[in-house]
Image (cartoon, rainbow, N blue to C red; front, side):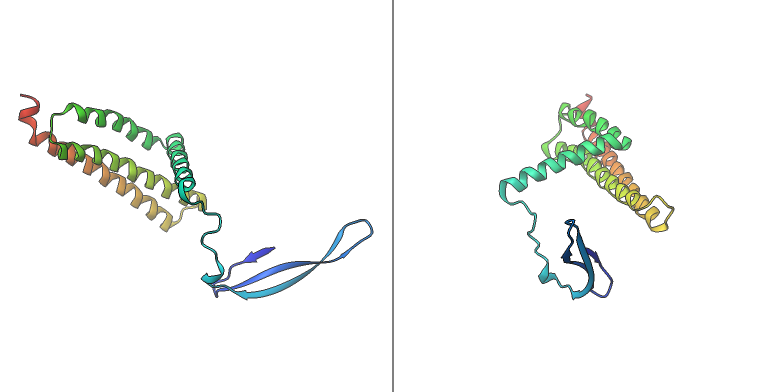
Length: 171
């Protein structure tokens, strides 16, 4: 069955009805066209959905696949993971209040989260087409700007915590 999705919410379906079976076992087909209107009542949103613990386990596996894929294909993400591998353990060496410590760790994790989203945007845009398209460029530039803001946020958080605690850290 071949389905086309026009904009007027009508679906034209080419249906093959099997009419005759020949002596050699092959089937002759007759092609017909049906038109149906589609609404959201006809779509079962729970089809192919996992539930309960199985859903959580599958989601965890998909998340690990996403992290592994990003590590494999995105150099910027690998650099930011290296930065996180230095900064997060380094934050435990600082004698700062818990709220400031959480701010340091969260600012680094935010950079990784934003980079993952940026990588996803870039992958989808590149999958659709590699042609120069203004909206595709805008989407990629916005993702890049989000990463820049995440990095600036991290820099500001770390600078602020270090400045506030400078005398107690290095006295």
